[in-house]
Length: 312
Image 1: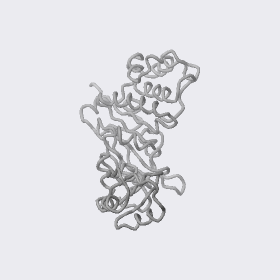
Image 2: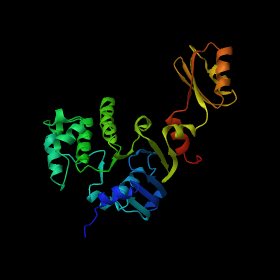
Image 3: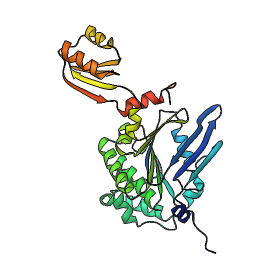
């Protein structure tokens, strides 16, 4: 009788890429993950966001089989995390570590490839990670962004169905972050599932198909970036007002529906539930000009939904 491998079973049943049910993890008296439920389907690019201590890293550790839950279940493509990792279904790109500084980029990938029974060609994964021209460079001479792309290349070797990224661009400059995400997005277009945790909200807004907000060890919001933003009422009114005085700023704050007024030089930013009323006031009773009205951003939604006591 022919035995079906986890990868073949996954292709046949199309089990969820990740299924977390009642996931709980405690460290002494601290509950890091508190009955968390989350399902991620194959092919999704999902950002997991939350403040420090929200339980993101603990959840990812259990997803990768690096730690065991105190309660609840974890399944990756219908099997246990450790089985999924052992069969090359899931790989991870972490913040740091895992690189030998004296080896070249190509030597590092070749050494990693030797650990697997079957891998993609080294030249192919270097190209997909945007490292072909850096193949002969020593790891110690690589920038932070190049080292993260090297970790990405290593993660691609077994052709995983799921790649998990834990704060992958911490410490990178803007250009390094852009190049790294271009490589991730290009590879994700092949249908791979990507789950990433990040503190950079612009990365989640730009690259995720779906955003999961975690606070207090639980999911407090789950949807597209537009859906998450829509959960925060009100808009932002921005205007140029040269020489605005403190009494004038106080008068703005006193308008009905105004939540906050911020001054940045000659620019005034007003967060309000009734943006039309604020705009009429600025245009008819003040010297303000160049008005713009925009919907709240992801940062506003993040703060509103993850602040302790916020409605979920």
